[in-house]
Image (tube, helix red, strand yellow):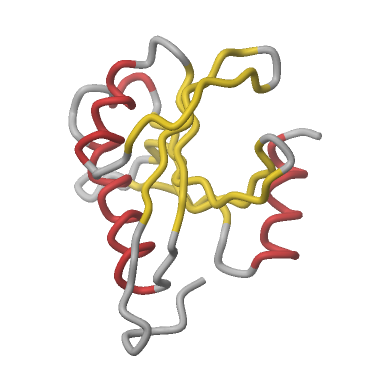
Length: 133
């Protein structure tokens, strides 16, 4: 299934989950996309914190800014107990972002013919705080 078809399916089946455009504040240029995306990993339903930044904008903090905002939303607004980031082996910048956001390496798997590190964030909430997802 192509990316566009997957994203349409996300919006139809999972409401707010899916990728959203990232727009440069000063220029209005499209610089990438990011979001919380429903995935099936090793036969388990997961929510992935994912992003993609255009190469021209690498190393400028946009990936971290997007991931940090999504992590805050997952932790403080929708109270996710667990979410993941799937990072291709060798992508050291995204690995650093995951670690800065409190994620830990859980396992390495093959996805779509590529080796991928699965980083996970686990949250525990007091029962009276919310009914977490």
